[in-house]
Length: 323
Ligand code: UDP
Ligand code: MG
Image 1 (cartoon, rainbow, N blue to C red):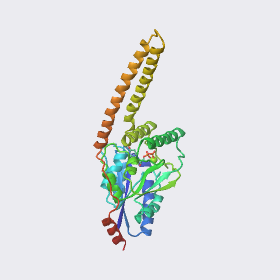
Image 2: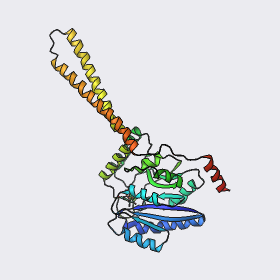
Image 3: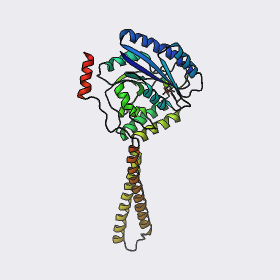
């Protein structure tokens, strides 16, 4: 028997939760028919909702024994919800999905197909359209992915989502990332493993509203940049070198002028040259400090140094399982 844990972070979702519950139960029923070896658990994370979400979860767990829930003491954000869900899930496979039906449960059988034979460790969806989203928001999102992929070594696929069907092995790898400031899109990509993207058109919420404001998203994208890139800390070095270069050019002009032009007034030029040289050096030194800071910053995350996907032992036991 194989257990699939479905982790669902919820924040003020009273309007869609019942719809989601009906929908997911339908899909679980269908999957159970096709694959009798499957069992399910639904793990809801109530992220400090202020509406009737918790009351709904209580009655759902009484109605269906596959339902478990964890209710936070306050709103900690979706990242914390996902982490709690992964940490408390018991399944051989773990699904992370939103409660608002923007991650259609109908995709689950297809995703399972990809991971069940061990060919992929993760199946996920990728939005190819952003219909229903404002133009400004889409433009900023595109810009974010462009910048991010330029300055960070961790590739973040445009349109990739937190709708994931993962093996236990990948989930354990994600749980080894203990950092407090979590940016899941980066973490999913950082841990590696074989990921299969399924493309689909954006789906709008049937009810309720997104809890992301424009500024909320903007702050979240900065979080992503600072969590997965230390490039901003190198800005001072580059700027410092540039200003020192200007000082050098000024020095050359100064020397040439003093040789060629008799009684030229060089006081202003000399002052400018010294100013540039000193401020350039200062910026450069700040940049060096930044480099040490960036190393300390990365060390403080205690990320694993490597993650294994397969050894001859795991391969052998996998083959034995199949027989
Ligand atoms: N969510 C959460 N905590 C929060 C904000 C959102 O658990 O502080 C959940 C929310 O209930 C939903 C998912 O995260 O299941 C995605 O949120 P939302 O639909 O607001 O974001 P969007 O789809 O607009 O990115
Ligand atoms: Mg949503």
